[in-house]
Length: 98
Length: 311
Image 1 (cartoon, chains in turn cyan, orange):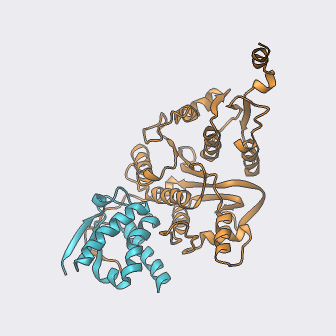
Image 2 (image 1 turned 180 degrees about the vertical axis):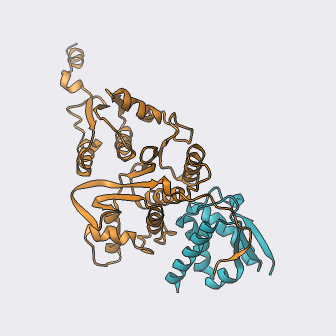
Image 3 (image 1 turned 90 degrees about the vertical axis):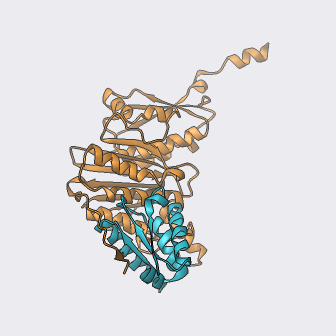
């Protein structure tokens, strides 16, 4: 499967609203539908809200399951704190949907 | 002719505009009572025919962000009914404070609701919560304070907490008027004070409304507020809500050894006091105040470029 990078700041005005989360979700889905591996670049982003994650990664989990996240989505250009926030979100949300 | 003469003779007491006195509040109940007493829905249109509201500041010695945001909501209510707002008899100190973030322009409805720098670099502009700018506001405030005071430090806790609070107002408050937010750095106490206020339904009412719709047992207001803070509980006001916002806010505040106050309906939560307290007075919405201790701000982090799995 081919890796394709999404530079989040180029897709989204910010990383705090569900509208921006939806924009990211759409970009992710395009790659997933083409059987690609998504690499999310959080270059110059140090914070994301739960609304943003709900409408992007949360929707991916809802529609395609945890395994899609595990096998087809990675992150790059992240601060350790941001990575921790995203991982914590996924861990919490995974418990809800299991 | 008789009708013309009658029209020109208006008794002075009816012609008077309304004056309300803002003041120092020695407790939160006094602030709540003042708000409830002076909202536009208590306006006597027969007594005060002219739609001018004078806000007299002669009894005020100090103002904080948590005074400004509920006052802004109150002012907005009057403006939405066609009232003009006048600031009266503020001392030089209070005038200076109000001018530092163009409060007068807000009262005159000339407020641009943008991110232009204020006259005081410790103050970020008073802002009406608008959906189309929630994406930008938290980043702007983060950059503003990092640039002016905390170069090399990370203020991501500030931007995340603010984003969650603004989204809460927009998603859940059901308010007829916008909410307001105001943030200021207190260089003496080394704390950033963030205040977000709305005159909406209130969190306990919202939670119990949701439980009622699910035919579940209703809770006391205090228990309902506590439930709202639970991770993964959501009233699902909007389809994308999942219940993680409050956990983000509370854990961010805790990580910086900060404090948070949540006043909603008749409930008060203060993070350094155990429990949620039910008051005898009702706040007409929700007021959230966060104090972030800037001495605990972490350093800005380097970005890591190694690809990482999410599990």
